[in-house]
Image (cartoon, rainbow, N blue to C red):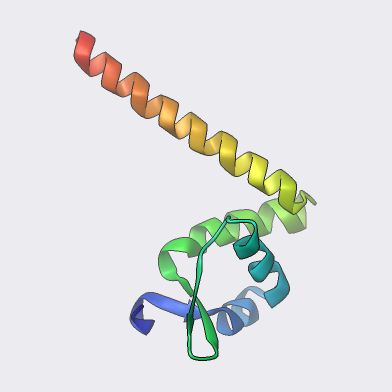
Length: 93
C-alpha cells in the first residue's frame, strides 16, 4: 500500500486524540482494515470517515464494539436494500 493513500495509526490517533488500542479493536472486529508496512500500522484515508463515525458512536454515545458491529451490519443491509429498490424501480419504470 502506498503511504500517500494512508496514515499511520499513531499519527491518526494523535490527531483525533484517541487510543491506538481503540483503532486496533475496530480492526479486530472487522470494522476497519489496517495494513502493516514493516513495524508501522496504517489506515487508509478512505476509512477515516468510518473511523470518525465509530469514534462518535463509541466515545460520545458510549456504544460498545459489539453495538458498533450491529450498527454497521444494519447500515450495510439498509444500503443493500436501497440499491435493490432502485434496481427494481428501474426494471418497472
